[in-house]
Amino acid sequence: MNRLATGIVTVMVLVVVMSVMLTSWGERAEAVPAFARKYRMSCTTCHAPFPRLKDYGDEFAGNGFVLEDQDAPRYFVETGDEKLSLIREFPLAVRLEGFIQHETVTNNDVDLSTPFNVKLLSGGSLAKDIGYYFYFYLSEGGEIVGLEDAYLHFNNLMGSELDIMVGQFQVSDPLFKREVRLTYEDYQLYKQKVGGSGVNLAYDRGLMITYGFETGTDLVFELVNGNGIGESGSWHTFDNDKYKNIAGRISQDINEYLRVGGFGYYGKEASGRTEYVMVLQPDSTVQEEPLLSYRTTNEIWMLGGDMTFSYQDKLELNLQYLERRDDNPLFASQKLDEIATQGILTELIFMPRGDRSSWYGVLLYNWIDSDLMSPQYETISAHAGYVLRTNLRLFAEDTYDIYKEENRFVIGFVVAF
Image (cartoon, rainbow, N blue to C red; front, top):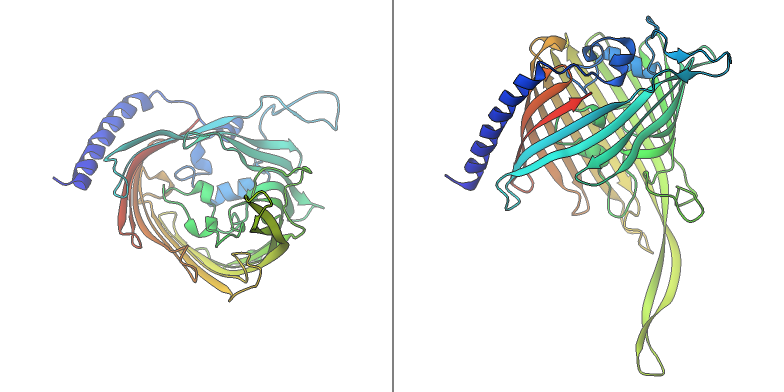
């Protein structure tokens, strides 16, 4: 039996053992995440299966994590100050993920990656029409990452459908949310950078403005730094240049099954560079000295379209196409030809009993092509999952890298409490 077959058999045996153990334990599991605790309802109200959001879950998040048709009993402490709202019990939740995987690109038959992710999450209402949300990565791949999502949400400004979010978020959130995907394989299109550019559609700092019309039309505008969520500089500034980047999206519900959208992004980034020359010193030593200092820029634009087809909560097809242009992603002193990058994201989700399904399946296709040698990316993933408890699911996933001709097989669990 070859190494791949041996690894898969070993992983299958381990997942069966894990399933038996978790089944006996799962019947006693009673913990549910923070929002479910707050409103005393099942996680399935918003998720199917978690962390994937249903339409109702999207509305709940868009309403500042408040259910319009239900008040949370005794949510705030009575302080006698009408301008002070203090949460009676601070809402916290934990998300824990662990995996067992086999990759043909490594020399390891089986890798026990457990736990791989540990998140501490909190969110809720601070006052009428003001909410917050954040999570802290206690561990990702064995190291402390820190804050990713972290923002204030001002809802229904001036009594309209105008919302503003300020803080850290993913630029791609109005499209398809990476953090609530079901697969181990990522939405690579959103996190991909080109050359030395720091711009992608993952995490950034800024503000997001949204407005919804009764016609089913939604508008989104984003203003971001354009360089991610790294540490601040010596002057306590996060942006490393003078430019701000903008993004916008318009989407339209065609009917109860189909939604289409268009997305655009424009930005500019700068990079300071110094060239050095080797100079012979009087003592016959050779020393490196600065020859020329200059600051170069890269101008970026992106255009794309997306579509979601959903049928009775049983079948969902998500499509994303994105075109990107960089005029100087290598930050050369003399600009070369414009660099073109294209990408496709296709996701098919099947739940035989809709939001009551215990079993579900996902097919995910990622494709990225660029004028540069890197990035070049093409994978197809097949994912099958079982909801053992409402807040605990098991899954098995196989991803084939078409470009590298490599394979990755993963089994794992995701639990939230």
